[in-house]
Picture 1 (cartoon, rainbow, N blue to C red):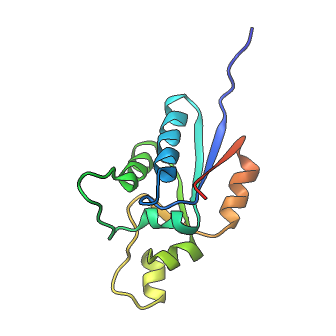
Picture 2: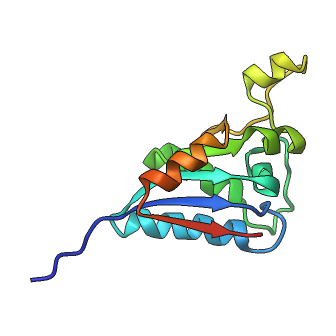
Length: 136
């Protein structure tokens, strides 16, 4: 008898929430992974994808709030959302530590997101059954 295996997925998101559908497709795929009973191990946002965690971004009312979808996945399912530190700084995304380091008034990161190094992407690649890339 065949038994379905639960897989551990990690995602690499390279596109910003406002540049096409790559970021939204990644969020929808992450939801499908969780709904399918699989594990979403880590989502790593690199390059323009790091803009996903920018709290000060304001979208037109008729556009999908992709960052809100990601924050919901973190809140409701414990999804680990990591913004590459170098990419995040270029996009103006700062956590409390980076805001203090760069003498900025406040953090600009959305709840549910964390800033981390590329080592976390390498770790996700090693520890996951599948790594899928969105955007590019």
